[in-house]
Length: 81
Image 1 (cartoon, one colour):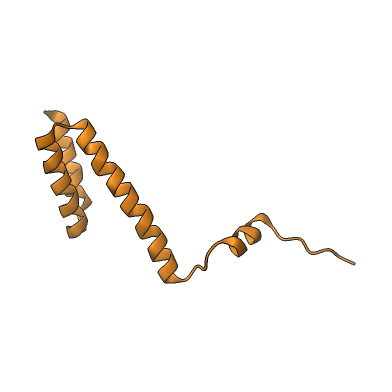
Image 2 (tube, helix red, strand yellow):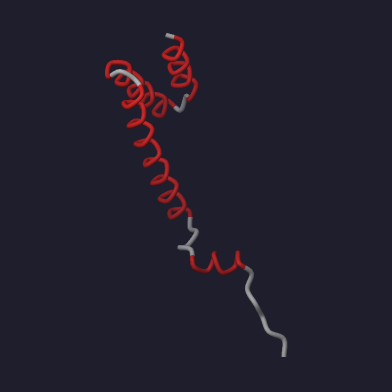
């Protein structure tokens, strides 16, 4: 009698929560929010308060406007000073 074994990927897939689109969005959203919060905290640790507040605002605006270059350019200008 042939024994059926599962691959590691099959085992992981069976243990993982459902991969419906809503679960994927929820999981990715949570990861992104945690990363964004950690980044903002790091900004306040690295830059003086006034510059950190400006970068925080620019980061939020960049996310809202779906324009990553705005934040990147702001960081480059702050680092050149």
